[in-house]
Length: 301
Image (cartoon, rainbow, N blue to C red; front, side):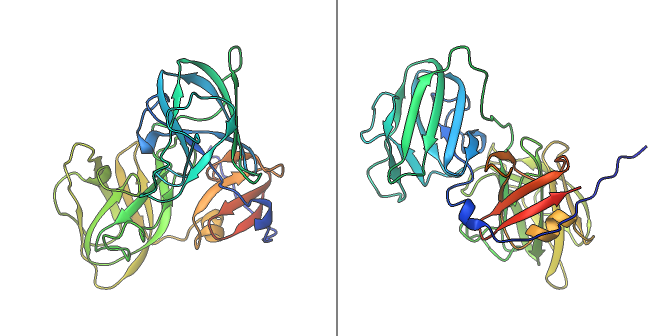
């Protein structure tokens, strides 16, 4: 028997003041489990708005903290090479700034807590021996970005639309995207080098359907050749588990209708704790969906 579930939105109330800080925070560096890989940066657990925690094993090396799977904004010590310890952090927001400071880490098990709610960002570092892991480490990027002349962004990294992962480490990405004729591929992060692309160069797309994709980390930069009579908005699904791209004109789910004009940052409980990166598959209850432009209340029955 097929399991059927539905979503009912009974109230859409602006509550953005409740979520004034980044929805997520990441660890990156050769001291972390996934090294310097942006698309595999370790995600901290959001305990409440502006409070982030992580418990786990670190290697000898360097680390800093990111607000998104991109190099900025980032947080580090006041001086590059400081030992990982409790204290005030500095925030880096510009590429040309000189304060790209990183912590020096000695291998061990750590408990990390970052507080962005005060005038200056603070980190608390404690021994994590005996504590269970806290936080996430994903095999898949938390979002992908369609890019190329087939999109309204063209080749502009800044204008590329974010397609969020439906759930943490699901490897599935869904969003509504306007397409027209031109080349198309999907970036794993908002910079060049790592993509989901076609299995052959100029693989044709002329409308709805399912298409094979492959990761192009090895430099094989195959793109889809989209040919459409006019601009058409599709519901795009990229499945990195099955290596499939699906384009559909079907109606979205209730969740997608709620957030179609925004980029989802996460789903929170009423205490402000991050519970998922997407509402798909969550149990019945009352949640807060935070986007980059709006924050909304959602009831799932």
